[in-house]
Image (cartoon, rainbow, N blue to C red; front, side):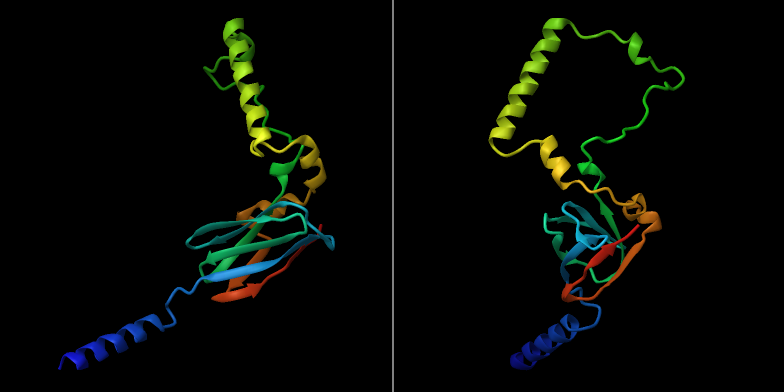
Length: 175
């Protein structure tokens, strides 16, 4: 009698695990190009019902991402974080009740010098160990401006149907 229960339990486990609803992850590899040339850096993001999943774009334009959920995804590509000369937000206008930067008191010179010294020491230690922000030279070599529409998930120009298993999916960006 015990053997029959074990066999029934095993069969039930197989039936549950092999249904179409099982979440077999997706593994993607591929290449991202812009105007036919490999995109030398950036982030490729898959926006699914279960969240967003990022893959760094390597210098040769390739990427690899694992454990994506199967289903439909909007895909975005971002390179602006590599921009060596980013255009930041305009903070010159102050909100009602805010203190303008020109009216703020500067820290005492001794304190400011100590903070600057500590920041410089930390940056040097990070650079020596291969950490910290990338250099201007690195950014200039790897940054490629692409149309801003590729980085907006609300108006995603790229979409993908993610099927369980291993697949190759290339993206060719254009103006």
